[in-house]
Structure formats: C-alpha cells, structure tokens
View 1 (cartoon, one colour):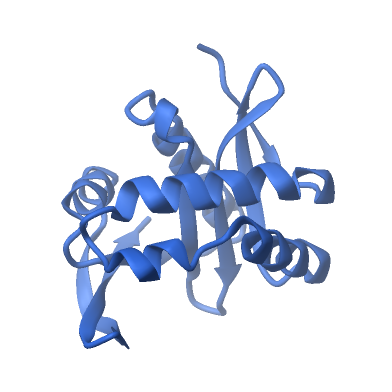
View 2 (view 1 turned 120 degrees about the vertical axis):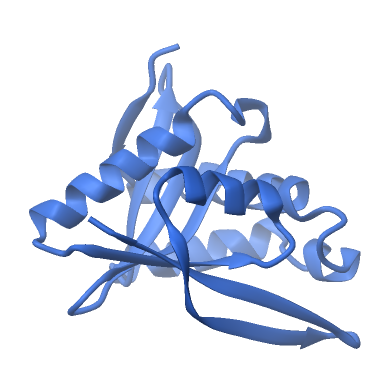
Length: 163
C-alpha cells in the first residue's frame, strides 16, 4: 500500500468529517458514555472542519491511498510548541502505518518551523492511543484536562515529545 500525505483542502471537508465521526465512534466505544460519543454527528463535524479550514486556525494534514482520504491530523502552532489536537484514521486502516506516516510529517513540519516540542492530550483510558504515542516517543507531561458529562468525568492526559 502506498500512502500520500498532503495539506487538506476545502474539498476534503466531507471525507475528513466522515473519518472523524467513524473513528471517534470506533476508538472511544466503551471508554466514554455512549451519549457523549454519539453527540459527534456528521453535520456538526462538517461545520467544525469548514470553520477550521476556512479560518486557517489549525493546519490539517491528510493521508490518502489511491486518492481516497484514509486519515488526518490537525495541529495548531504556539510560540514554543506544536499542539496536536486531532489524529484520526479510517478504522479499516488501523495498524497499517498511516498514523506513523502522519506523525513523521508532523515532526518534519515542526523541525522546519524550528519547533522542538509537540504536545497532545489523550484520553486516560485509551490504552491503544497511549501505546501508539509512547512508541512515537511521547511521554506524560504535568497536566490534564477534565470534563463532566452526565455525572461521569472524562480525563485527558498531557503527553509531550521533544524533537
């Protein structure tokens, strides 16, 4: 399989939104309340991605195979670090190296921008994501974010990687 990586275009919004929703439901099933997971609708994600790409508030890099989008990541730039806000793949492509390919592109972009720190937040109970980011060289930092949803606390832990 040959995968291509490129910057997202406005014409990619529907595919990005679809992958976002499908991957969200697959990755977080059993890790968060179902009502929270199901609140991520295709219409809402299309609106979100239109806003992100139209405003340029985040840089979005996509991976495609045979001109079909199979994954993406989204980053924002701080003065001292890059913040990886989203990394989602088609569930059918898990384990095929696309996540690693996107992460290599992210690191290359960071180095070109003379930034030596990447940060992200990961759900504390998402062991597969924690394992993936750890293999990529990320370590837990001193920080977390939490949110209450219908009496349950959802906790995201800070992970960082120095380049």
